[in-house]
Image (cartoon, rainbow, N blue to C red):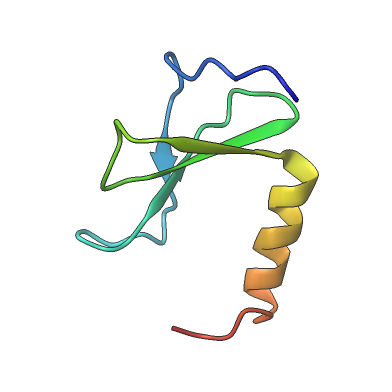
Length: 70
């Protein structure tokens, strides 16, 4: 098991592709080797933390259309 990541000082941001009122996620870039992710509609809620390579593979899959459309 890994130690929890302290996200209290995280600088969260949304993608420039996000639109007002949309379903968005936010990421915090200040964690080398990790990508913290949270729901923008619930900023006080939980966050998930992924290894950078794992998150990069997910983003590449989204761009490649591997997950279909909603």
